[in-house]
Each structure stands twice: as C-alpha cells, then as structure tokens.
Length: 147
Image (cartoon, rainbow, N blue to C red):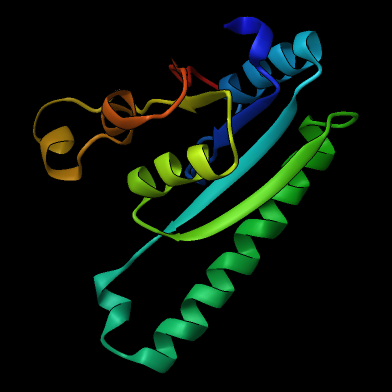
C-alpha cells in the first residue's frame, strides 16, 4: 500500500518537546512519494473553561490562533519545499485525529508517542492506543527521543 501514500497526517501536540522524529519521517516519506503533509493540532476541550461561555469562546479562539501560528512556523522552518496543509480543531484529540484522518483522506498517520506507563497512562488515556484501534488508515508511531 506504500505506493498510495499521497496524504500524510501528522498530529502535533505542543509540549516541552519540539516535534522532531515524526517530522523527519513525514519528510522522508513525503519526499519519496511526492506526498502532501497535513499538520494537525487539536486544542483539547477544557472543563475548567467551559463554565463561562464568553471566556470559553475567547480562550478557544486564542488557542486556535496560537496553534495555527506555531504550525505555520513549523511548516516554514522544518517543511520548506513540501506541500503542507495546516488544520487546527477544538475537540477531544484522539477522536478528532481519527475524524480528520478520514475527512482529509489521509493515507498514513505519523504520531509521536509519549511512552507513558502505569497510572498516568490509565488516567490520561493513550491517544496512540485509541488511534491503533480506530484509525481509518495505516498508523506509524514513533518514540520522540531526545529532540
């Protein structure tokens, strides 16, 4: 199925770690298959913000704008000369990644795992584990390493 990899979805979570390994893989595969790279950030829903509707609207608009700027910066600096599309959504990250993989007709999803174990994994859930069970296309998980 590798010949069909024309649209590569790369979910990006902004954390202390800069996206590295997942972008390197996306670049290599996109270069080989002349594919488009779809950068996705999902702003997680926050119960703390939901109590005040006007505050919530302001918060999510700000988070969405901020994420779009960060993704554009990544596209300019790390994905120069590649066909890149930026998507920012507000939702539950795991469910939205699955939904966007289908909507954007992704042929491959590349996601960095966090390697959480034990109680943290149980409490926080695992986006990668959710994707393994529900992703509509091949999923490539990569350990972020020290980037």
